[in-house]
Length: 509
Image 1: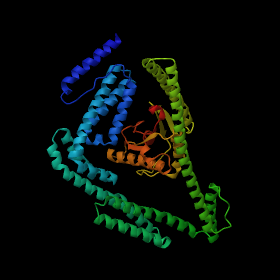
Image 2: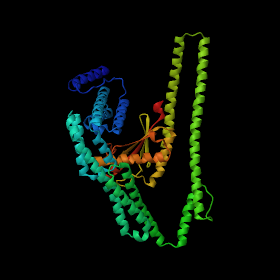
Image 3: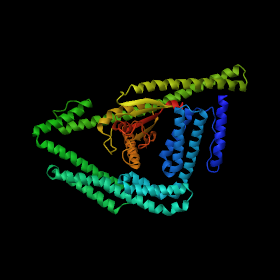
Image 4: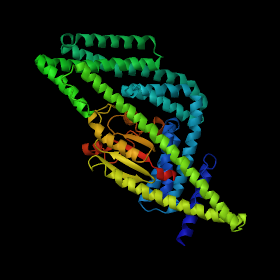
């Protein structure tokens, strides 16, 4: 009786909603036998993928409606609503997302110049320009709203003005956010005695700044080279700071103390590389020995990586050969027993089903074993490790970035090293890195900052050979997915986090 009532409820809802949405919204019917938890997870994955494709930006109204239905489905699942109602919300979430994709495709064609200009401005950090950026962003939202309201002509008419606005913001962002910081550092360094402490490095920094500023002024559309020169100038200013600090500390040291400091640093590195004690040799020889050890380690790593690939190929070839032998013997048995083709197919189907069942159970057992192993890699203070459907999530608690910055501090390397081990425990899985912030500041700045921080972690894993770059994805959610209230400092600290999601082999099995 309860099942019949649920079916009647679902059918009634569809009839009621069809009258107001049939002309513009196609909703696929739901099956009452579907697992609501699994369907909610599929909708989450779909919307996350849509975010990486900027559908939430190109069709914000329809995407927001889809996200709202996802929230309704989650709320229903948490509060034991009927399966029919939960699945209905999931179905409407997919339907609204499909409509968002349609309008996003139109936007990509109709206002492609404005979209590209916005991407370049965001990449340059234009979101930090505050009200000026928000004004152009509001004009861009008006373009997408015109498209969603089928006013394509007005969107195309105003596109060039919006594109030019983003282009101007991009140029300002490069000069103000990057060269502005260089100038600030340079002024401070000169006031602190850079001309006396590090005159050569100061001159290099001033030349890098002048070169970047001139290039940006003359070649504003050479985006890649412009950013390269700005980054080079910032690097020189930061380097000058370190050279000054060293020069200042050396002023109070005896020459022998300086020599002993250098010797000790070279010796520490050599010991870590299991190198010989060469303190009785010139510093140049000690350095050459260290470089030689590093090259040797790199060669060994490359060799073992190639060897592992070769062993994997050989194992797969042997496995295929054994499987062929088994199939051949089974065919002979079937022939000797005089079975018909139909009976043989039925038996093969039974054997295949048994193999699939065993493989699934083995995959689940293996996943649980690896899950337990990964949990043991982290302390409670370092990370929270849990399952999310068929995926494994490592929620990093201790990783911290400088305020408003996206580069990884060295004290984060140990826990990231543990994450690398956890990822490699699953072979070569697909990995998604999510960045999250609290709600301090504007949504645009938080979204860009969380994306940059997630990308910084992705680049760290690529640089350390964890996975190939196509296996790693970075996505920033800004402050959209808080775990705690943003009203307290503790809650905001919890919400500023990096989540590493490992798509395990269990899913493919």
